[in-house]
Amino acid sequence: MNQSPYRVSDIMTCAISNLLADEETVFHGVSSHMPMVAMNLARNMHAPNLVHLNIPGGVNPTSIKQAGYSSAGSDLVASGEAYFPLEQIFDLSMRGKLDVAFLGGIQFDMNGNVNASVIGDYHKPKVRLPGGAGSAVLIPTAKKAIIWRTKHDIRTFVEKVDFITTRGNLWKIVTPLCIFEFKNGKLHLDRIHPTSSLEEVKANTGFELLYDELKFTELPTQKELNMLKRIDPYDCRSIEFL
Image (cartoon, rainbow, N blue to C red):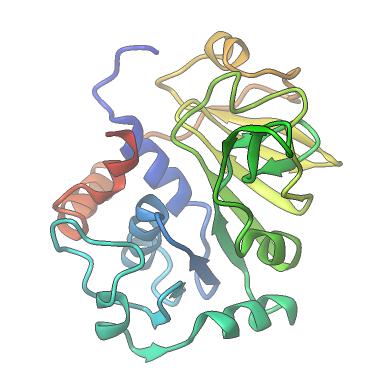
């Protein structure tokens, strides 16, 4: 990866934040520190009316400055404006009222298939993963599903996933190297981070890269970096890189 004064975790967090629009209703689940910080960054920078929903049920929580802060902790409810339980999130999404859902996965292929279930044969797996949980409901029903992954290699972006946990209706996948966009039934290279290169993305992707033109992710502005220091002083956004 190219030497840069910018941290990849900051680039990813700001890129995710800039995918969110004002007045959107946005949900994140467990182990979602980066999206959680990105949502709060968006609310403080350009989307003051964004509605932040989360797995414990807090709406627009304000307390996100504690060391070791959890993306599924009780503080999300205690500091929230209201309580909106998880079962209502699913109902909201199935009624077409959830604008964005942040979800995870372990393997992805060009056809937008997501594997969060097993590595290897399903009946005799090398690794058994947590499974789809809410992804099987939210990816098909949310208006826009965004996946973030802090690892980008040929074991993650594969020619064919070992198991299809869920499929289709992805919008973006944000990685340490680039952003993919799902369109016309295929993953396309949307933007390359300035800390990476086309060659590096190709070398770490197990399927053919489709793209119309080479575009690059905007680097974080000084205002964004200053805001990140204020709202995330314990650097929760970088936890998954540790």
